[in-house]
Amino acid sequence: MAVLLAGGGIPGGTVCGATDERGMAPCRDACSPDDLAATVFRRLGFGPRHAVRSASGRPIPIFREGRCLEPLAG
Image (tube, rainbow, N blue to C red; front, side, top):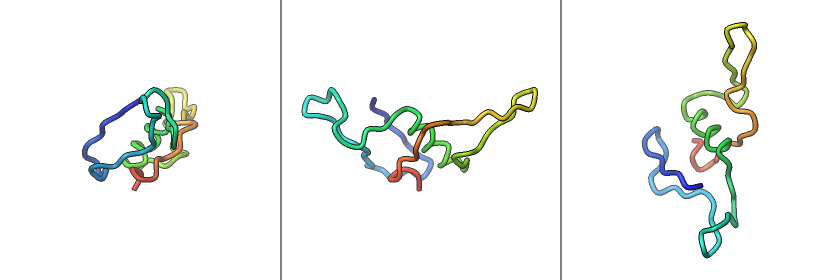
């Protein structure tokens, strides 16, 4: 997975992780879509335990398993 982000205070030129020499698989600091979501939500000011409420009042976590990518989390 490759993602390009701009704005939101994310420092330009930041790279997280690395792939093998063929670009086929992560070889260092792999991250998941959940990690990216956790990082974006943190930049927006939501903590890792933030939840929204359903119409019936049930709490729904905005992300469950993601970890914030520290170079981007700020």
